[in-house]
Image (cartoon, rainbow, N blue to C red; front, side, top):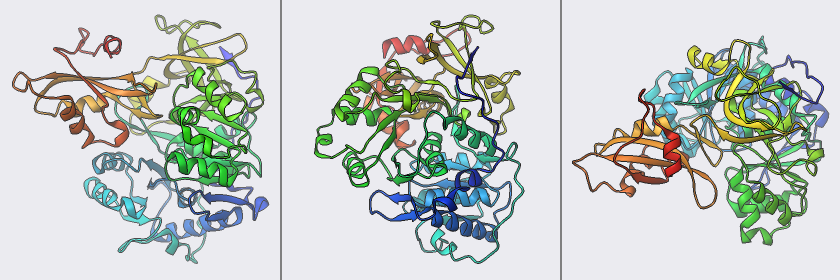
Length: 522
């Protein structure tokens, strides 16, 4: 068993809005949030006051403790306001991908039991259709403005009493993101207030921000990585968060230059752009002090090329998963120059890890031996919503969460993630469940069988690669037709990017697809 070198962190018994914004009064007129495109700024005093007014308005509208509110929005200044207002009103927030199809969004709404949607006018058609398909939605509220819908701006005028909700941080669910876990279709991950907030406290000794630091929020806040590293953590510590709605390279680089960004939390595709793209030379990025990459493995040579080009210390990495609130490992900011290339980091405070044999899961392995990574700590999720069997498959009776990832630890406690037991594909940091794409491919009348695995493209990113068996009656079925069929029915990040036609899909006697065999052919 491996233990953190940091002192244990006691569980933080606070709701997330109080844990993050409890120091807002002390930070006062310091900028909390800045729109990276137009410069609109909210101070800490405004963030605190506005989210409390919105909480009152939500309560007036009928939001009650235990309700689920779906936050369906790209990164905007309104996203944190809506999030903290909803939790202060007693709701659980389920964060939804803004590019999800109406059908995908409807499945999340129905599964989570959502009664409220907060979205933006641009996404209203998808939100309305999803609400119609799912049923049970009481109201769709917009962040900006749209005819026939209340807006958050209007709701700021509420003079109702601020709700005083008795929350149990250990039991009440603050956030319900959706994750495919180690296998299968997306499931609601129940993260309590205590789990989310304690994970922030666990991370602080290793990656601390301070007033005056400026963090660029370009990764999506609906993703647990963005929610923690780009919103909750810096706002808890008095830093300034500069918000961008999406990653566009020149806008991203201009925001670093204009707003003098000091810290970047990114995913490997952004590291690739920083290391290779000629546009980088046109901007002054000298304010940057560090870059941390997570959400997917980062190639060590690419990390080194990025650091050298930007004149920075070696890039750090972090490791975790939605089911872990999400962090378990990070390269501490004060050890960036000491960490070995390619490491995912060291255990954060209050976290235990085991590496167990793939052939004999009851056998613990030592340093230098590769096996499945198991994690135990206060950040382990409460469970999957309404899926006790899936929860029991992931968290054992002793509280160990089985990550499905294969890793090994060196003598100094640095973790290296070397493979994945699980079948999930990580396309640019987003989870893609092969089973979901396979089920969709089988609805095509010309497809007899299909399997999907992860494969690397020319840029070193993992992509969904479909192996397709044509029906005898459809010998002309082509790659473009297959990719278009999927693209019309899923969010952009789930699209099949490569197709191989095959005579059969290899399967075990049990019927399970032999993905390892397919990956060797991909």
